[in-house]
Length: 425
Image (cartoon, rainbow, N blue to C red; front, side, top):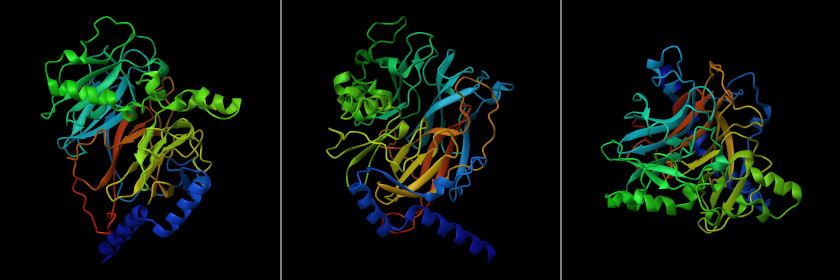
């Protein structure tokens, strides 16, 4: 009997997390829109965080499961990525032909510094992960925010920045890209240049359109035509200036000199999702949020909602399999803990914060810009998910202390129709 009551208690908590109070949410969302806020946080708990605790004092998401993709181990490299490098960061994930994939940047010690390479791993169950392998040969690639693109023609492409030299990488200097195909049999195809640099570099891979595989070439062209996907990289740097979001140019902003100066920070680590009313939401670092009501053709001037407290950590929003929404971010201007998840009925008003981790270990290795905490998270979305991962749960990847890559699973609970759904993984 005790076990039954405990199970029922857990189920009710999980359902409350993803079900919410629909009527109240709708009323407050209308008020948020009338007040000029494209996104609103209704979570007084976030004003009372205790940063002496990894969770900030927030309850841990019900049913949370955490799995390690890689944990830096300088003393025992064979247990990690084989070289004992201690910087692991910039992760992205994908679902492809029944497997989960995670890609990330690995450096010997310091952020964005040589030696560096892009790695990936895969899993058939989300729990056990394959030994990390090179996404591209070392020296060919640089890190991005995004690594996986499911083309409309069904091809899964893997991309990274084209490495120009061994200098520390800079987001504003990125633009050139390399690409290869992740085949249906989970092997990787040949490496090509997807977006050429202004000046060629030594040993630059051949241009993608020289490939004899027509489906691959078509997929590459579809990727280059997807402006919203490429806009996820900082400042729209993977697009030509005329293709970028209008607000990537501060001179286009309406406002005083201070606002135009602040606008220079707009466009870092953008995330996009479609809310219940059909509007597209773009949210990035420094709390910037913008809305498109015409499918992404035009965007309203970005604003920083007063209730959204965040800074240089990433903000990730997505629709979940039960028809609701999740927003995950570090709710503080300085700390990268806790990593909090809030939920919403409509994609406008978010509430009921939970930590998506328990106690976090301390950073073990020194390095440049190695902020402690859990951050730079991404989930499954239309650009990286072929639908073969059958699980009614939220899957997310994040970087811990910039030296460990973790994947989490959070059960969703009920579907939008109110019917109980199952978790199969």
